[in-house]
Image 1: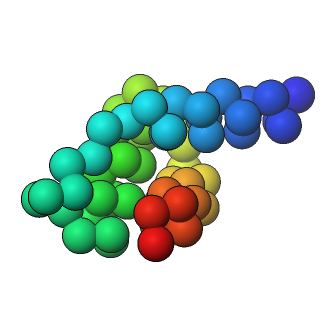
Image 2 (image 1 turned 120 degrees about the vertical axis):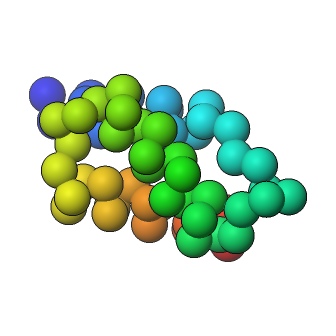
Amino acid sequence: MLVDRVRTLVDQLQTIPIDWQFHTLASGSDEATRVLRRRHPELDETATSALAWLVSWWWR
């Protein structure tokens, strides 16, 4: 089910450590989605952008 898949990705995204001493909000969001995309190469640009937005919203 799509909802379950999205929840799994969001759960994984929340566990990715981001060094906020080094990253800005934009670069930290990009780094988190880069890590997630390495784990899940099937993610397309639309999905990656949505997940990057989510990280930036969490940490705004």
